Image (cartoon, rainbow, N blue to C red; front, side):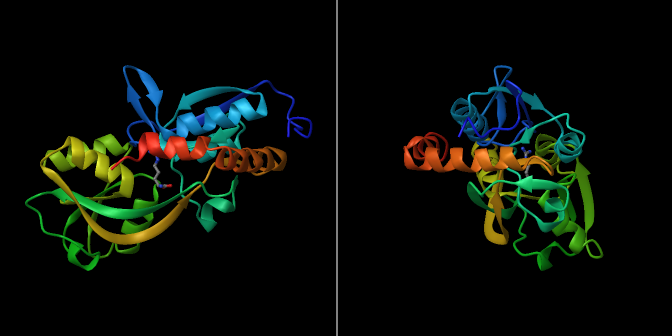
Length: 228
Ligand code: ARG
């Protein structure tokens, strides 16, 4: 694995958006933590590279890969054909879905039910893509971070947020006034992203993922972060 690595650098700059996407990435006592962070550090160990984590707003992650400011993005990022035009994805490492999250007193469940309502999304996220498809009958509120969308929900500025399932469940756990609706608006795969030209890095990430899946490390990370 190491001998085939064409990238000579000792350090890999890894971008994520940690504000706040639990359990994949979040900030605890000023430190960036989460499933994605542990996973990329394990991959770094296998590739014998130092991992340097950078916290960047989600819609800035792909541009930072394209300009070479980042080597890798791990951010609960969904594989889409649109994104694949500009970056390379590893094999998927997690299957997720898009859900609605809202105040307990609000009763919305399907995309149709959002008709005439104020819907929050995070700029450039796949929730934004879903909302944009129905923009003719909803009002879209775009936020820079997931935390801001949840704050807007708590302040009753919007009726619902379209959000990834695991973060939605985590936010509901910590905000007793909120609920999520287990009605899958979309099914998605998360993968690790690298720049379009960085084919050897994506290959190495894929073999590292395979190693972590066969040696039990991946399973332990799942147990650590996805206990019900
Ligand atoms: N899965 C969604 C997407 O790819 C949202 C990811 C948000 N990630 C984050 N770290 N805040 O668009």
